[in-house]
Image (cartoon, rainbow, N blue to C red):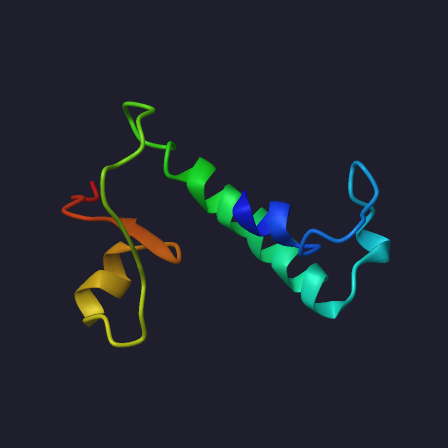
Length: 82
């Protein structure tokens, strides 16, 4: 959400923001904010519907076992996939 709020650096912007008015940096920040919100919402897609306390983003340096179990760009710490 902060990326979305700060996409225009406090400059005058349409309300709601018109993405066609964004420069390249504002557009990047807006898109990053949108994707972070999607990731946050996806963390609630668990059997309980509750989000985890700790989420890790996958890194190229992760062991193969993490890559084999984590089917997205992030995974829940200690999660056992069944």
